[in-house]
Image (cartoon, rainbow, N blue to C red; front, side):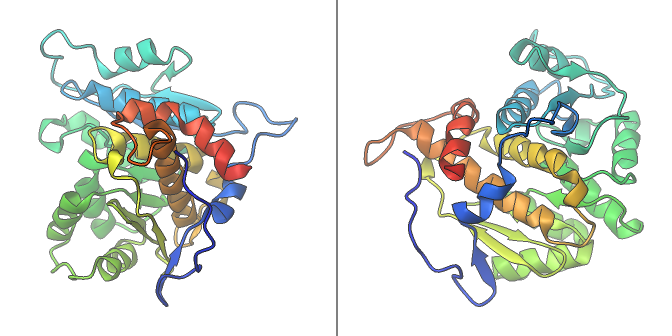
Length: 306
C-alpha cells in the first residue's frame, strides 16, 4: 500500500519541514534521450564483509532499482576469509546483480557508499587506509554502520573535503556522539542539527520518523514510516537508495549546502513508499523483508513522480 497523498502542512514545527512527494519528485525524474549510463551516475560500493555479505547485496539491489546508471563494487582489502562456506561480498553481489562491475578502479565514480555490513573491529589496516582515501577525496560519500565512527574521527582531525552523509540509527547515533566526546542533546532534532554543524555533514537519523539535518541548518522530517520497515537489512536498502541519488545528482551536492539533505529525505520517503507497496493493500499490511523493499522501489518511484 503506497502512502496517501495528504495535504498536511509543510511544517510540523517552526524548525523542521516535512518532506512530501511533491518535494521529492524532481529528484526522481526519468532519464532523458541523451542520457547514458555514466551521465546517470556511477556509485562505488565498499560495503559488506565476510560476516555480512548480504548487506552488500541489499545496497547494490537498492541502488540499481533506484535508477543509477552503474554500480561498481570495490572488494574490501580484508584480512579474514569467509566463514561457514559463505561467499565473499563481491561474489554475492555478482550472483545477485550480474550487471554490477567488480573493480578497484575509481576514475568514473561519482559517489561512494561505505560501511554497510562492516565491523571496524574486523577491518584490516589496508582497508582503513582505502576508506581514509575515499574520505579525503571530493566525491559525495554516504557512510553507514561500520564507517560512522571513522568518519567522525576523520572529520575532527582534518578539514573536510568530501560532502558526507551519515546514516545512523538511534544506537549508532549515540555511539557517534560518544566518539565526538560531547554530551548528546536530549532532543533528536537539536542533536542531529548540532552534529551536522560540528562535522560539516548531513545527518540522517533513522527511526519511525527520520530526521535529516544539513550543515547549513536545514532540518527535514520524513514519516512516520510503516512499522513493517522494522526488520533486518532495511537500513542497507536505504543506504543504497541514497547512494544512488547521490551518484546521480553529485554535481549539485556541495560541502555545506542542503542538497544532500534533500536527497536523503527523498531516499527516506522512497524507502517508506516501497515498503508500503511491498506490505500490500490490507489495512494492517503484511510482513516484508529488506529485499522486498528494494524490489518495490520502481513502483514507489512511479507513485511519487506520477
